[in-house]
Length: 325
Image (tube, rainbow, N blue to C red; front, side, top):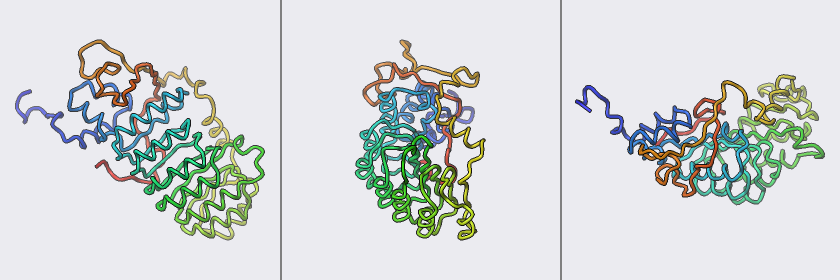
């Protein structure tokens, strides 16, 4: 390659430094392009250095099959080797996958799993393994209730942010969710940020939360129609309260967020790709027999993946996580 003064020996960089560089690339390139450059880069990608943050929400929105989601999450979490600080993916299909996350991602600080099919029982089992979580998003997880919230609150002692936003169809027919409000009040006293949009609660339940969560600075009550916001503002003038009124812009955007993403498949800004299955001699071709890329032992050669551009996003900028080790 010539003298060191003329060329930079990228392959000789420390793995954690390369990992920080690769984290700025789109996930598509991290999984399919970077490993084929050289063996040292492939080792970085298949190791924990790129996976302190696992955000596959954009890919998840393409209505992938549940078994494909399970394989992707398990592969990336396993690659993190326990160093993952953030996971963002909606619609976990079952309890075993959530239990897998609890077993292999105990350093988590940000957990965003809205619309997941998890149960109270598995949350009670897994929550003790997630003591470092500071921000939790369990919006529209309709199979959990007060038991799960209480488990998270008791075991996630550092929790300062909770998002438990429901969709109107999630709470249709429910008389109230005061038991969930009570669980938040009794076990999450350190909360500073709370979103409970469209929960079926009244003013008394919110006052109970405010009486116990004295550090609360932001409260989203959009869609909580039985709450008297004027009374709250009089009692807690320093608290930023959003709602319970909902403007048309928010209502439309929220409904679109929960709608069929296939409506946007013709957008020119969207591109799709499938994991390659080559027969050439490039380094660690994706879909080949080499286990350096897909070390989950199952392979993903039939998995179609679609991205909306972008790389690793920070969907919740208010809460930080430690730098790459």
